[in-house]
Amino acid sequence: MCGIAGIVGNDLGRSNIKAMADALHHRGPDDSGFYSDECVELAHLRLSVIDVDGGHQPMVGANGSIMIFNGEIYNYRELKEELLKQGEEFTTDSDTEVLLRLFEKEGEHCLKRLNGMFAFAVWEPRRKRLFLARDRLGKKPLYLFRQNGFLGFASEIKSLLALDLVHQTSEIDIRSLRDFLTFGYVLTPKTIFKNISTLPPAHWATFDFDTLEWKEQCYWDLATFFCGKRRTYDQSTREEFSNLLNDAVKLRLRSDVPLGTFLSGGLDSTAITMATVEASRSPPQAFCVEFDDINFDESQYAQAVADKLSVELERLDNPKNPNIEKLVWHFDQPFADTSIIPTYTLNQAARSRVTVVLSGDGGDEILAGYQTILADKIFSRFRFLPFSFRKWASRIANWLLKPTYRKVSLDYKIRRFLSAYHLNPKQAHVWWRGIFSEEEQSQILNLEDTKGYDPMKEALKYYEDVPGASFLDQCLYVDIKTWLLDDILVKIDRMSMAHGLEVRSPFLDHRLVEFSATLEAKGKISGRKQKKILRDVLTRKIPKNIINRKKQGFGAPTRHLGINKLETAGFDELIKNGFQLDPEFEDVTYKSFLLNILDVWLKIYLEYKKTGIWRPLNGK
Image 1: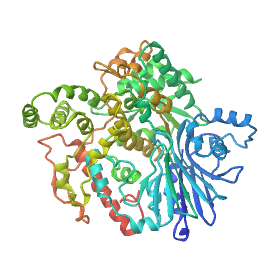
Image 2: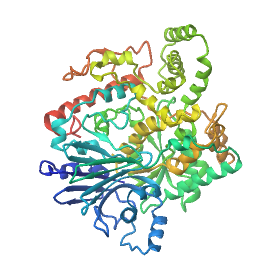
Image 3: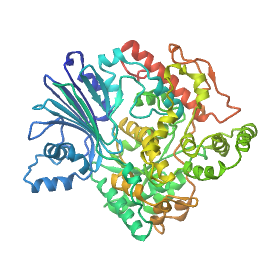
Image 4: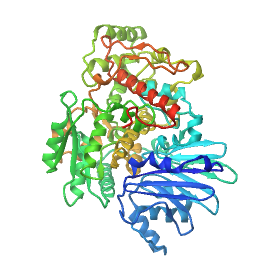
């Protein structure tokens, strides 16, 4: 796993590729490399995983193309064998050289043959053209700054913030602030900065130095699988799923450095750890986080699985007073998932023992594992009650239910569920993950400048991509395009790269994602039993109390880290100071944590505008 950065255009003299690279040092602590000519400057920071000695970048191909690559191509050995049979010769054992040779032979068509997570750039000197690409689901990030014939790109926003052009023109996008207040993250392809965007997942793009033409194209469309023919749920389907999962794990065990797993004790991480044990010569090192608050702690389940699989489990204490400023700095833009704290701890500890870990991320999104799916089923009946009854039920719940501040407490879920009384099923599904309502946002932001922008409507647009799919599959598609892309994958990337650790997610192997998209509903959920196919595959392999236990989710107690009042100076045009929460009326855990993140981020941004340096306020 690595960090990449580059600039293309006639204004290179005002740029500093070294500063861009320095901002990404944490992503690639093992090696660095640079390339420059009169048109382009490229930088690569390397975390050495495959061919530790031979994978230096930028790498020059047989045709003179120069590549910088962030990620892993898991099927590189199979692709290399094909190329060898075609007469190609290799000087390294790295997946980078395989990818570069494949690109020089097939161009953008090679992307459909890749199984991996990646973001890469190829400069073609003869054509004076830059080629950029990103993996199918967006596991590896790629940020863009384009202005007046100048292009900058990087693995993280902070690298682009090191450019003078970006500093001089950076402005907060209030639409992105609305995204953040609504969901706790910013929706792709926007960022918090008006002048910085992301290359969408499953896209490639080219930038021509002479003509300044920018071309962007999608090479994989997940919607076609959700709208295609349904896969019948039967024994052969279960066997196919099991084989795919095992193969996805085996491919991700390819590494020249120590490897481990994250084991929460939940179904997904248990399945991955078990498959890792079965495919490995020696048991992997496993890691989990334990909490003093029993409402959050799952470590006893992780220990039970570890004992069953004869795996060594390191149980880590969740920090009570984390460095919030450092976390905000790593994300570059406001991001308020409460699990960033234990995730940071988990990755930090794992890096001291291994360089690569496998995780269970993605299982819930592709197999309908979240409680929001159950809420959808209940809501389908609830909405047929008289409107007046639904409205009064919500009001009575707000009056009678006092906050208990347990982990996603019953009082919180009931109030949240009933607050959607006026919505249709599609709106309600998106709303389950919401934080601040539009009315509350109007008390925090000056919404006049948003020109009718509504984050909820932006998320709802994804339903239009899959009109022929079932409601369940439509919801899963929306979750993949929003929650998975802009929360889960961002969190995994930043918190792992903060410590130079590579995290691999077998459930997000594109073959498994496609398979699950075509699986009929009863293979995903049957009654209240979610992730049905995974549970059936694991039956008799792991303890029933693990298979059947209620999903808890990976959160953290953050009530003590939140603020109830927002008073941030210097942003009068955007923010109305003085907004205040009432912790006696409602569970404000997520709202208060979000406000604290926003408060810290705004202060870091204010300092950046003054100094041109993106750094935590305490400088550490």
